[in-house]
Image 1 (cartoon, rainbow, N blue to C red):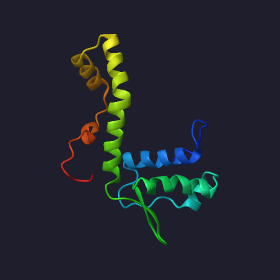
Image 2: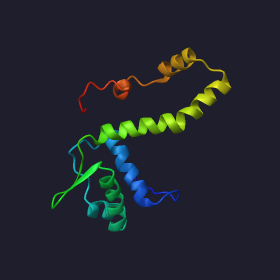
Image 3: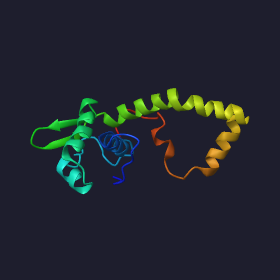
Image 4: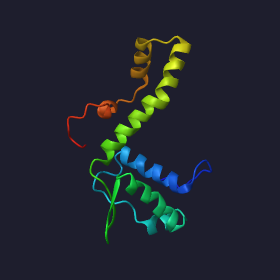
Length: 137
Protein backbone atom coordinates (compact mmCIF):
# COMPACT_ATOMS: atom_id res chain seq x y z
CA UNK A 1 0.00 0.00 0.00
CA UNK A 2 1.20 3.47 -0.87
CA UNK A 3 1.87 5.49 2.31
CA UNK A 4 1.07 8.82 0.62
CA UNK A 5 -2.34 10.36 1.26
CA UNK A 6 -3.89 13.29 -0.55
CA UNK A 7 -6.34 15.97 0.52
CA UNK A 8 -8.95 15.21 -2.14
CA UNK A 9 -10.93 12.81 0.05
CA UNK A 10 -10.87 11.49 3.61
CA UNK A 11 -8.05 9.09 4.50
CA UNK A 12 -10.47 6.31 5.50
CA UNK A 13 -11.98 6.49 2.00
CA UNK A 14 -8.53 6.40 0.38
CA UNK A 15 -7.65 3.39 2.52
CA UNK A 16 -10.86 1.66 1.46
CA UNK A 17 -10.08 2.41 -2.20
CA UNK A 18 -6.56 1.00 -1.84
CA UNK A 19 -7.86 -2.25 -0.38
CA UNK A 20 -10.39 -2.45 -3.24
CA UNK A 21 -7.54 -1.96 -5.74
CA UNK A 22 -5.57 -4.73 -4.03
CA UNK A 23 -8.56 -7.07 -4.37
CA UNK A 24 -9.10 -6.15 -8.04
CA UNK A 25 -5.40 -6.61 -8.83
CA UNK A 26 -5.33 -10.00 -7.11
CA UNK A 27 -2.92 -8.92 -4.37
CA UNK A 28 -5.63 -9.84 -1.85
CA UNK A 29 -7.60 -12.94 -2.81
CA UNK A 30 -10.87 -14.30 -1.47
CA UNK A 31 -10.32 -15.64 2.03
CA UNK A 32 -7.10 -13.67 2.57
CA UNK A 33 -6.80 -11.72 5.81
CA UNK A 34 -6.56 -7.95 5.72
CA UNK A 35 -3.62 -6.45 7.58
CA UNK A 36 -4.67 -5.78 11.17
CA UNK A 37 -6.03 -2.38 12.11
CA UNK A 38 -3.14 -1.94 14.55
CA UNK A 39 -0.49 -2.82 11.98
CA UNK A 40 -1.91 -0.49 9.33
CA UNK A 41 -2.31 2.32 11.85
CA UNK A 42 1.27 1.91 13.08
CA UNK A 43 2.83 1.47 9.63
CA UNK A 44 1.12 4.49 8.08
CA UNK A 45 0.93 6.61 11.24
CA UNK A 46 -2.86 6.72 11.22
CA UNK A 47 -5.39 6.79 13.99
CA UNK A 48 -6.69 3.22 14.46
CA UNK A 49 -10.26 4.60 14.30
CA UNK A 50 -9.52 5.94 10.80
CA UNK A 51 -8.34 2.49 9.68
CA UNK A 52 -11.34 0.85 11.32
CA UNK A 53 -13.71 3.23 9.54
CA UNK A 54 -12.16 2.37 6.16
CA UNK A 55 -12.39 -1.34 6.92
CA UNK A 56 -15.97 -0.95 8.16
CA UNK A 57 -16.98 0.47 4.77
CA UNK A 58 -15.66 -2.73 3.19
CA UNK A 59 -17.68 -4.79 5.67
CA UNK A 60 -20.80 -2.71 4.93
CA UNK A 61 -20.28 -3.36 1.21
CA UNK A 62 -19.93 -7.10 1.99
CA UNK A 63 -16.46 -7.17 0.43
CA UNK A 64 -14.85 -8.11 3.74
CA UNK A 65 -16.13 -10.20 6.62
CA UNK A 66 -15.28 -9.92 10.28
CA UNK A 67 -14.32 -13.08 12.11
CA UNK A 68 -14.45 -12.50 15.83
CA UNK A 69 -11.04 -12.87 17.39
CA UNK A 70 -9.38 -13.60 14.06
CA UNK A 71 -9.62 -10.36 12.07
CA UNK A 72 -11.12 -9.35 8.74
CA UNK A 73 -11.00 -11.45 5.60
CA UNK A 74 -11.82 -10.85 1.93
CA UNK A 75 -15.31 -12.26 1.30
CA UNK A 76 -16.09 -14.93 -1.25
CA UNK A 77 -17.18 -13.26 -4.48
CA UNK A 78 -15.66 -9.87 -3.53
CA UNK A 79 -13.51 -9.59 -6.65
CA UNK A 80 -16.35 -10.65 -8.93
CA UNK A 81 -18.69 -8.08 -7.33
CA UNK A 82 -16.06 -5.35 -7.57
CA UNK A 83 -15.37 -6.12 -11.23
CA UNK A 84 -19.08 -5.96 -12.00
CA UNK A 85 -19.46 -2.62 -10.19
CA UNK A 86 -16.29 -1.12 -11.67
CA UNK A 87 -17.26 -2.18 -15.20
CA UNK A 88 -20.73 -0.68 -14.77
CA UNK A 89 -19.26 2.54 -13.36
CA UNK A 90 -16.86 2.74 -16.32
CA UNK A 91 -19.64 2.21 -18.85
CA UNK A 92 -21.85 4.85 -17.22
CA UNK A 93 -19.27 7.47 -16.22
CA UNK A 94 -16.15 7.12 -18.36
CA UNK A 95 -17.19 5.47 -21.62
CA UNK A 96 -19.44 8.34 -22.79
CA UNK A 97 -16.48 10.74 -22.41
CA UNK A 98 -14.15 8.33 -24.21
CA UNK A 99 -16.69 7.78 -26.99
CA UNK A 100 -17.15 11.55 -27.40
CA UNK A 101 -13.38 12.03 -27.63
CA UNK A 102 -13.12 9.26 -30.23
CA UNK A 103 -15.87 10.88 -32.30
CA UNK A 104 -14.35 14.37 -31.91
CA UNK A 105 -10.97 13.10 -33.14
CA UNK A 106 -12.50 11.14 -36.01
CA UNK A 107 -10.96 7.84 -34.96
CA UNK A 108 -12.39 4.51 -36.11
CA UNK A 109 -12.50 1.16 -34.32
CA UNK A 110 -9.92 -0.50 -36.58
CA UNK A 111 -7.43 2.28 -35.99
CA UNK A 112 -7.95 2.11 -32.22
CA UNK A 113 -7.61 -1.67 -32.12
CA UNK A 114 -4.45 -1.57 -34.21
CA UNK A 115 -2.96 1.06 -31.92
CA UNK A 116 -4.03 -0.88 -28.83
CA UNK A 117 -2.42 -4.14 -29.95
CA UNK A 118 0.77 -2.32 -30.91
CA UNK A 119 1.15 -0.82 -27.42
CA UNK A 120 -0.43 -3.54 -25.26
CA UNK A 121 1.88 -5.54 -22.99
CA UNK A 122 2.36 -9.19 -23.90
CA UNK A 123 0.65 -10.42 -20.72
CA UNK A 124 -2.75 -12.00 -20.20
CA UNK A 125 -4.48 -8.62 -20.37
CA UNK A 126 -7.71 -10.14 -21.67
CA UNK A 127 -8.01 -12.43 -18.65
CA UNK A 128 -10.69 -10.35 -16.94
CA UNK A 129 -12.66 -9.16 -19.95
CA UNK A 130 -15.80 -11.07 -19.15
CA UNK A 131 -14.42 -14.40 -20.27
CA UNK A 132 -14.89 -15.89 -16.83
CA UNK A 133 -15.86 -19.51 -17.15
CA UNK A 134 -17.34 -19.66 -13.68
CA UNK A 135 -14.05 -19.98 -11.84
CA UNK A 136 -13.12 -17.43 -9.22
CA UNK A 137 -9.50 -16.96 -10.36
